[in-house]
Image 1: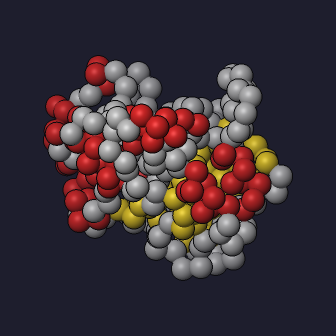
Image 2: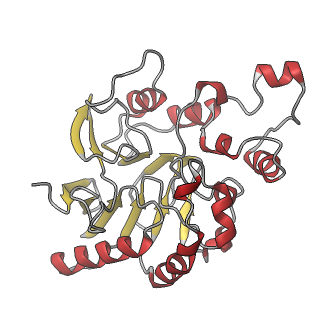
Length: 279
């Protein structure tokens, strides 16, 4: 029997994540064999990494990098992750496992490596923006105001020199959606940052939701997602969805439903339950 834990948004509070995983092990009396992250982990290991955090400057916390490094040194579980939309994207889109001490497996889109024999996992990093579906938009080609970019490393280089906004690194591409849709069907788990359907409190916008297209094509046994800082369990077709909460609230405790714990016996994920339990 293997124990697998999927964690929700951490937003760089890695020390809380370490505490949470240690508590899961203590309560279950067994070791965690694999951790998956649905994004917004926030491994800003060095102070300079915060330049790539998108959003208001008040959320940039370079003074927390020493605590992140200390927590990362303590991290002892196999970890596989996708990106959310608040990450050190220059470290992810130009992937270099050595930067993370070879302690992290990552994918922009497609199959996701891990340490559990027989488990089929896939994931999609980032969120949707229809204007960013291609590496070079039609408008850019017409105006020729920016260098053409044909890959994520090229996009990172352009962002480094302020030729494009760093926020453009957060949006996945159409070819990545298509890549996932043609994988072999029914993986055991699919990691998405955004949900395949909008949470009840958010009015669904008209138009595409590529996450739903992927789920409908692959029909995974489970989808785990984050982004909306809300825990929820629901079904889409033949797929069980577990949406995960953000790790900490104002009290700096760990929010109910931040993680989902699974058992794996070699033929399927079983006994899925939220942790901390939802009242």
